[in-house]
Image 1 (cartoon, rainbow over the protein chains, first blue to last red):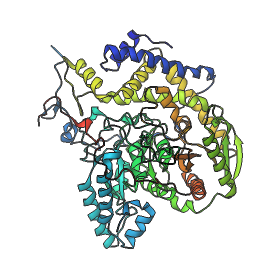
Image 2 (image 1 turned 120 degrees about the vertical axis):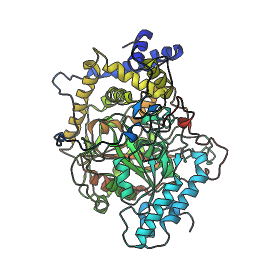
Image 3 (image 1 turned 90 degrees about the vertical axis):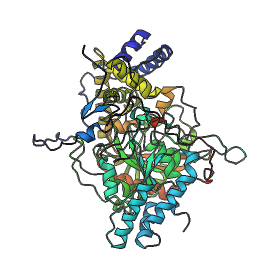
Image 4 (image 1 turned 60 degrees about the vertical axis):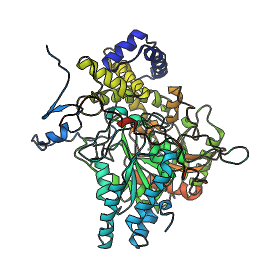
Length: 95
Length: 519
């Protein structure tokens, strides 16, 4: 799979990562190289194979649907770059 | 008492119990060694001497009162991927800035509750993505081992300690901790172990809790120890492993006393040798090492069987779909809002993009973009689903093998330690470092790397043993047989002590804060 610069820009936008012009050019080559390399998987017939979802056959654990944690707002905002009271502060998103 | 830092866990445990030295004296020996060595090796990104001495004091109290816990007073290093209460945790990325967790990882809590002492946080590849520790925001770690030149003298070229757990492997090899925590997503415990002459085990997926460990690829990540000997690794894993309700994939199964297993020998053990690991271009010295390993196990009473794991060659390409896909999802949380770095933009989206563009290094960005691509609309089936199906086939290969053998023996890496920059320009060359280790993560199995000899360059080489799910005990038994035959391998020249001029561990991740912080 050969990706072009427009695809790299679209993917970077989806991933919310700012990249420079020069980086985009470099990534075209790198991503194409990696995608070409993983395409050797096409040699493997997987038509009758189930995808692996877990490595050991265990039941997914369940617990009572009750509140068992909380009242830690101070902890939650402790590392935020911008905080007001117990709110995260972000640039305005509505006009 | 001199050179207390050169002890093994088993020896130090004995010495503390016999009161030959105190936990405080032992801890001080390590703190002194770190101070003298870290400028040259860059293994620690955050030494925590105050915490260590406080923990050691508590240990001395307990030792005196005859209330010693299993790891009482034993000083360890902690990979900076493990969240530590009130101690900066960065995953060696700029994007976490000076993140101070308000909780401790379960594995860490298990160790400290068992009485261990934390010496500090250890360097690693950024978000554990790398095989050389060169992607760390704190700069690379230097391998204590140096190549031997034609004149028999050690050369000064810097070698990588492997990755991603390169700070852990270098610190253990250089006696800057008794043992260290590490994590392994594609080989990040075993490959650094092989490159530094240390022992590293990745347990079965689900053996150790992943809670409080910075996530990379959730279906592959596992914690495990790096240690000086097989016995030490057994002691460490026993303490690290537990069932944890906070990790839904942690498995509720008893953790055996692995130390007891060590003495059982390998008589009658069936060892499989997979022909698919004899890859093209494998160096003759690796081939020779493998043959030696086979001979040692046979001499110790094991039987050797040729086996086939036909889908081996597809493990690495499948990994480079699954791991980036899961990483792109896990790393979506670093948005500059809730913690870590924020680079202000003209609006919220621009803030996200600027923050993530500046906060992630090139390898992490590359993997997020690959992951985003393979998960994007229209490609999910062709890539991620396909790779998960290939994973089923890889696991089936092993299920088939377990019908005739108990463990599988392979080399750990295709080459010995390489020089700085040697593989940095070519992502796929770097990815090939994991060619022998990655199948184990894909199948969720336990794997151990044990030092087995030296390369023609005089640097360490490792052999890998792969086991059945939750049969780490058998891996320790077999690894002990190899260690007994190969002998312990330690660095011949301690060139790194007292060097002051080399690049210091600059907290690149904790530089200036952007955005004002309000209380």
